Length: 312
Ligand code: MG
View (cartoon, rainbow, N blue to C red):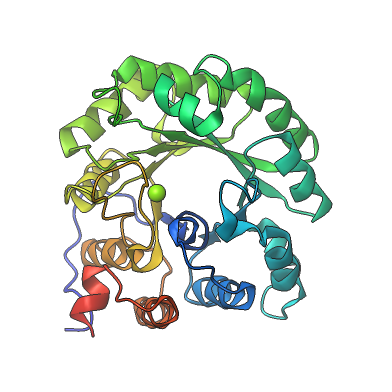
């Protein structure tokens, strides 16, 4: 079978947005440097496959993520390409701090993301400051981005568990997320960075946000499949009204902090489920699978996506 049979389920959104993170979140964990032209082709193919939002890269310091040291060159290449042109400036880019934002502004980007932490230890390790101090770091960045008319997404990591601290309390996640939204982020992506979440946990966290006045329309979910729960969690979020889902083509990427992390939810696997539920994504599954198969060839190892494997 090339596509699943469709059986719609009552109460689900008619359509959802898939926020493709493969070129940024996926590739950032690749140790072998991927040429800029390959990345540009990857982004273009994902856009052509119908992914409505493709996060292109990160303006993180090259010392931390050498793979994305070509962020400026990549954006310039994308903007120069006929298929994208000015639309390249709408592709989200991660800006870890004010200097990252400077570069995004110089290049004409209109959509940025910051990367916060729900936990103290991950804030220390990833942001080099405490959980409480991250807000002071992000505030001027978000304010300047908003003043420049940019859309700003807030990523929130370790929402379902932390490799050093273990369980993370729901109110801790909600309080952190609310502060990022109040700061000026227009949406929040809740990350299960180490993939330990389960569907009941997803429902509980989304309900806690609802109680705090943050509806599903301002939230996205970002699941990792470390323990095989990513699709089940995505379905739980869908049933709770979430309409933006992060996913990575071919399941590229992982978390360097999680033992044997199997990485991001594969976009193909998510699309297969949504197609079967009759929830529109706008994604051409054939074109997406072709893209991931091509990228796997470039990286020299097979895709971990079950759909890509099944259709080989
Ligand atoms: Mg991820």
